[in-house]
Image (cartoon, rainbow, N blue to C red):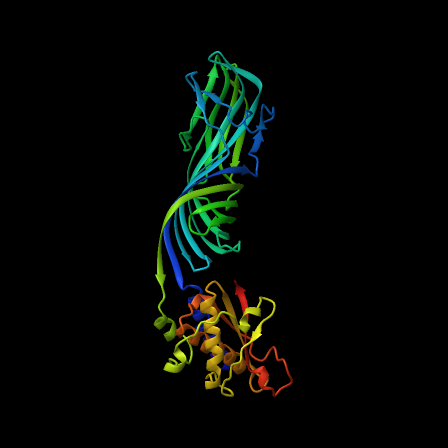
Length: 425
């Protein structure tokens, strides 16, 4: 039973902490377009006949801005595009808290292209051209979806590190420099005077699923991403074609080539989004916390700003013990805690950029799980008090340590304490 109560309290407190961090929850819907360099990790699989007339030569040979040409079946020379690229159009829904941490859900349509080059040996004459090499490509379309988690990467919250896990489904392919759709009717013939070769369809996988683990950096407020991903398919090869070679109108050799799908992509995405901010009010926070502190009386409600304070010496490494007093075994603040809390509220108001964490501790008396719950309840009470003084919820984080960090041998009143540490100045 104690474990159930502890779990419920932790969930409630996590909700309160999440709300404190989500004081300004930004939800956005946006679109982005991406372009990336696709690196093929598996070469085509070649199943040669007895003569090995066809060999894989790697990527088409040209510089980055060079032109490529192919010959049509009619003997026409046509400029084509051979590049290792990924292009996508992404719809994105993002939920981020005030510090920029959060989640992103995306759906996208992707077009990818891999380029290949194969050598003919011997060469063939066709329409006054010498066919010594055949450049080709495999272009695939797919739908993708994914979920990403964002974290702080820099202190100014301008750049976010994220990890995305996505999945996709290939929906169609074209092949060759002429971008002919891949289907059972796919065929190209380059035979003249009884010599040459014919390219024809063998098989294809209509539906290939793949996983996409991805890591990258993004801007905090706009859908701008730099990512590196791997595309891991459920099938090793998605398309096969047959090259049939002829001499004197006689079939002399055949080669079957299968094209794989595993690859890595370095991608840049740029887009736009529409943000809407939801401001959580204090009443909603009050209803979600535990044993809320009643509003202070008129004498203590007016916070007097101070130009100096003992809290000025607090740092991330040197917590300050607050002079607070609770009823034994309870989370109720005693009246002699009011001055200390007013001083803390005054200091926070005078230093609006400071974010703090309140750590709750108990004495090592009684049940361990109850002490853990009590330590959380006490810091929740302090946070509520500060909120009623006008301190924004996202500036105060809370954590309960129970009786795990005593500073004196029990029983000892100093073990029942709340410490403050600086998270951000």
